[in-house]
Image (cartoon, rainbow, N blue to C red; front, side, top):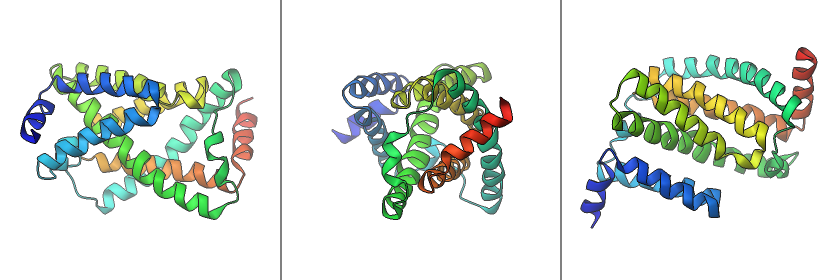
Length: 226
């Protein structure tokens, strides 16, 4: 049974079925679709004897990757920060109420930090770019145009999956995903670069929320632009 399921999941077209099932599950609960997709990834990698290169982790973590991820994260904080400010100015603020428990509560902050690194930074990058984006690109020919199209489709899908953040959140996350898609296209064997950037960026904002100064930063961006 495991061998048959594995043989099906490594077929190029299986990614379409996985996304369709994940989407249907997400209509019931957004976490169901995410964990279903991630479960497929882990099952496949497990059957491949933990060959993580299947989802883009073909290089070990090294100093160059750490340095690059740090400066790119800082750049990513300011550029999308400006874009997010414009979106929130016209479309309303992101709904981040799910993180309110971390404000001033170090215990909740520490737990959320671990959850974020495991399920957002690592899990989302492995699923959406290492698996979905790569499998789509290879399904339709593995050309530059196909990779671009795949990145756009996954960015839209990833943005919609963050619908709980409101319209500005959907668009902002989608734009950010396009940036990550470009990075992945340029670094197909080094998904850990994206994992670190994602984790550092989210860590910055989570820390600002914990310190209850995220609104101050948002106001600074607004004063800068408007």
